[in-house]
Amino acid sequence: MNVLAIETSCDETAAAVFTTERVVLASVVASQTELHRAFGGVVPEIASRAHVRAVLPVVDEALARANLTLAEIGVVAVHSTPGLVGSLVVGVSVAKMLSVALGVPLIAVNHVAGHIYACRLAAGRDIYPCLGLVVSGGHTALFDCPEPLTLKLLGTTRDDAAGEAFDKVAALLGLAQPGGPAVEVAARGGDAKAFAFPRAFAHDARLEFSFSGLKTAVLYAAYGQDASRAAEPPAGKRLADLAASFQAAVVDALALKCKQALKLTGHARLAVGGGVIANGSLRATLTDVCAKLGAELIVPPLALCTDNAAMAALAVEKIARGEFALPDLDAEPSFI
Ligand code: KG4
Ligand code: ZN
Image (tube, rainbow, N blue to C red; front, side, top):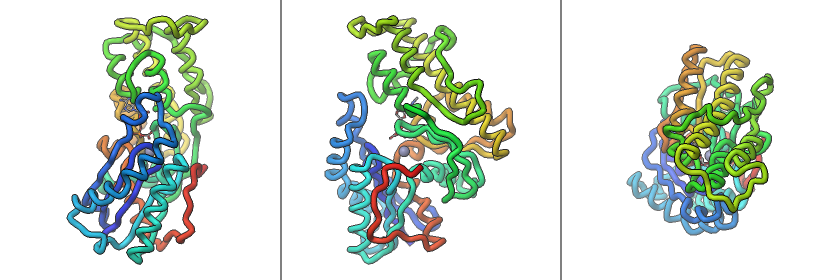
């Protein structure tokens, strides 16, 4: 059976078609990055309006690429939580409308559980139980995942998400958005030990993260204690050192908590999702952490790490259990 899935939780409008055997027939992602670039972050109202414009063409494109018509869709799935409520509402409304119009069941999928499930899709085999790490612009959290549909939160960030910290630090260093790739490029050739930036909870067993103090530390290091933003942004070796030292602080914090969580849970696999895992230094460090603990690191190809609708193939697990959503399904901004 063919499943049509929709994702509109943040700033990507996405649709995918996959079979209940988890074969992805098409996955289309329309990014809104350009619309938000000038604002240094996602503007919720702009995001939801852009989803309204993009969602039906994106669904049509996914069907066309899968070489299917709506009549051949047997289930409609949608990421209904977590995310920006005005954005989620667009996908949920369209999914409900299609489910009623086609007379097919509706499945509600948790977007964060979907990020972990992208690892299951990429691996092509069962990966549960596992430790799940989701690191994106909106999330930084560790989960104990006994099976695909159960996420037990082990710890999350008290303030900024890791990707958000990359974006904010890029902005204050005068780099382009999205900040993660820009900071990674700027960090090349920099000395990661040039600035001793803080690693929150480093001497603590709590599986928590905090990146806002780090961001302030970078601001002061770049512009002085009075943080005079009128000053020219750092350049050359100084910029490289700042970027490399910041990146190392984020990577260290993430790696340490993964290590602690692997030891705590005894899991033999670490499944990672979210756009921040595009970072080469984070990948290398997590590879090292897992190798030392004899654990397997599962990182899907980048297109499955960043927001997409193929990861809603988690719906297949719900179909198997008959866990269908009712027509009163609502968007839920927070699930924790
Ligand atoms: O999962 P994702 O595509 O989308 C949402 O969060 O909605 O993640 C995007 C985040 C952004 O904050 C971006 O700066 C970050 O992932 N990112 C990176 C890198 N590439 C993307 N962070 C660090 N290093 C990178 N190479
Ligand atoms: Zn996401």
